[in-house]
Length: 250
Image 1 (cartoon, rainbow, N blue to C red):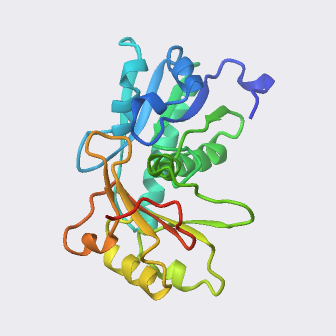
Image 2 (image 1 turned 180 degrees about the vertical axis):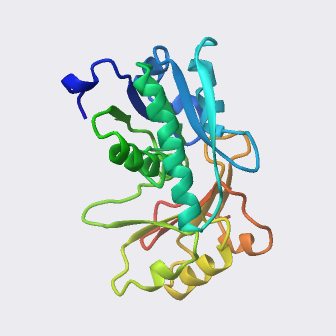
């Protein structure tokens, strides 16, 4: 979106994906933008005041730049979540109306399962004239495939990226299942995801990755292990029908 004559005094919002966790994977363009914004926003849980996205980007945020955490409820109540998105969008718009440039930080890519995407919809609705620029980031599943030295897709293969927040039913519901599947948010209903992969005959081609790019990164070659010990929040599963390049559990 470009500025119009009516908002030449307004600031610009930059949606920035800081990558999956490794500070070296934050995009160079994002680093450059962070040197010149007036305020940095990031999502946090209503239960704490922590933001991994801010921690990743912190070395690139000047001390003079204000950092504001916006608390979002971890809820499946659509009305409660919608109210939070709108309220925080209005907070950001007020800063832009003062002529301040702002960044909204998010893990991975801003347009992939990101809180930023919901806030952006509200900003477009509330203040469609505002200038917004989104900077793409490296997703957790891209980084995980690189960590495994395993291609995500080859030739004419297809890739399904699905949230595992509600279990494995999205995979079960497909008559023609793609050759490659990524389950993000695989921490809460891991037993059902494992069951769905087993039913599809692709358990042996599945690998779990936790905290990719972080100090406690872990690769789980047998995802049945997750049924004995709960995976942490930053867990995903890559499942391939053709798993010739996957690491071996020797």
